[in-house]
Amino acid sequence: MAEKTKTSNDRAVIRGFIEKVVIDAGVGRLGQQPNFEEKILPQVMRDIAAVTGQQPQIRRAKESISGFKLREGQIVGLRVTLRQNKAVDFFERLITIVLPRVRDFNGLEHSAIDQGGTLNVGLRDHLVFPEISPEQSPVSFSMGMSIVPKVRNREKAWAQFAELGVPMKKEAAKSFKKKK
Image 1: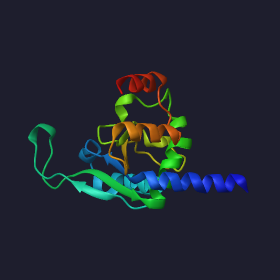
Image 2: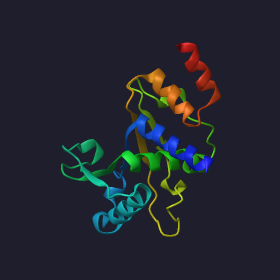
Image 3: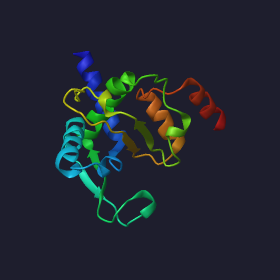
Image 4: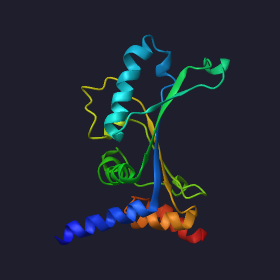
């Protein structure tokens, strides 16, 4: 019974701290493959929906850039914004399950938190999420996650993220304390 109360209190603390979680996946290079919109895009959307619990929003290019072989209106990425309970669930899974599964992960750098207090985490491969089966997902893509706190101060956000159990490098924590 005590554990259940502790967990609900942790969720309340996390919910009071996190405003939203934004997940981005760029599909720029995948978009140049033949049959992208018919075969690859639905698979990427299914994988992101499985990870986040909601359907991603398609992001299109606003202008053409010839150096990148990009045309206006072409699909360049997918985005999902999670708020309230879905944001808390995703944050807990990210910290407890996903980050420990990342190969050669030693903690987040000091630079992962920007001046506004937002924690930015990038994953090279989406297969570290337990919801994704490598056999079912032939497409590999990277994802970026921005965890936006209600506090817009870097030092306060750093302390709160550390208190919530976000794994950080020891050197980063020491250097951050020295910079104060």
